[in-house]
Amino acid sequence: MAGISVNLSLLCRTRLHRRLGPGVGRPSYNEEIVPLLCYLDAFSGISGDMLVGALADAGADQAAIIAAIASLQAGAAVSFEKVKRTGIAATKYRVAIQESKTHRHLHHIVRMIEAADIAPRARRNAIAVFQKLGEAEAAVHDVPLEKVHFHEVGAADSIADIVGACVAFDLLGVDTIVSSPVNVGSGTVKTEHGILPVPAPATARLLSGAPVYARGPAMELTTPTGAAMAVTLAQSFGVLPAVRILRAGYGAGDHEFKEHANVLRVILGEPTGAAEATSVTVIEANIDDATPQVLAYAAERLLDSGALDVTLQPLVMKKGRPGSLLRVIARPEQSECLAQLVFSETPTLGLRIYTAERRVQARSFTEVATPHGTVRIKVSGAGDFAPEYEDCRKLALESGIALKQIIAEANYAYLNQPK
Image (cartoon, rainbow, N blue to C red; front, side, top):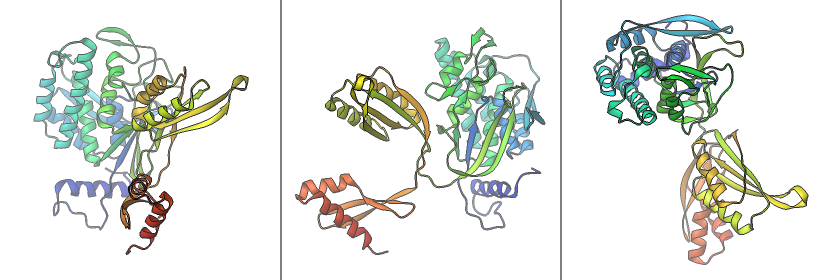
């Protein structure tokens, strides 16, 4: 692991200690164990070999990955090579196949992974990725999962890619994986089912619900293997979360592009304490033909369905018509559901949907006792606080005391509680 920064080396050793347990491999320094986040920056798509190369470039032990793949006995030998893509230094993960193309069923691959000499977490993750691939292929071809022939994704090179990536994540001690929106490419791709448009059917099925786009040369940038690993292993998709960056790695693709460096970048970092994701979807509509009652009900439905915030802003629209700007802030994974709800509950014929960055402070809750009952207090990381409105409203209705007095009593109780 020569060339790895001291901070990352210490962090990896700390994680090794945590996995093995107290008294085994204990580091000789006093360092707090912190979560490690890995961000997949798929601006040039994602494939299995790019992901393994990027994780190795970020510090995963290459010899350990090579040994893990050898233990699969899948007819694949792997190696790593330093290359450049549009001037960017990257690591290329190469897989040499020692067998003819073989079709395998899911249970064959699962048995192979279960017999391999790899860590339990890497084994579980690899099996989960193949399960996701199998489900996608079964849906595309309308056959039972147990009858799916894995074709390209079941070949020895893809088994080496998936297991290699899962082993690398485990070696680095990654706790959380977040992916950027995925560049899928465009044009067509040659498969065992003939020439197909990009994204290929299995890739499109796998990325259903994930944010994707097409940019760059007209070719496949995201493979089914890469898509399966992104959707199976990533907890969320969006912008880079708030982290303290420790290390970045670059995994090289096969081709050299003029438009951009054909690499997958991974960023390893320590989360800095933001309690919520910093990527949100904003849904907007200008509406000039809805009554206030309809808009108020739509806002209520959106909040009940999981919107982070809903606002209505007065507008003067074309021909001097009064109207309203409906703005919904949503988690990315809920954007489609909430967009359909706007269509169903308002007369709008169109929406604007875009991604925004959201910065939030960590917050916690505590309870205080007032003369009329218990109230929760929300406390920010900076020390600001506020009584929970719903708690105060409930006590005001039950006691007949003015809401402003309940709020004042909650504030007084918080400020005077024992420290």
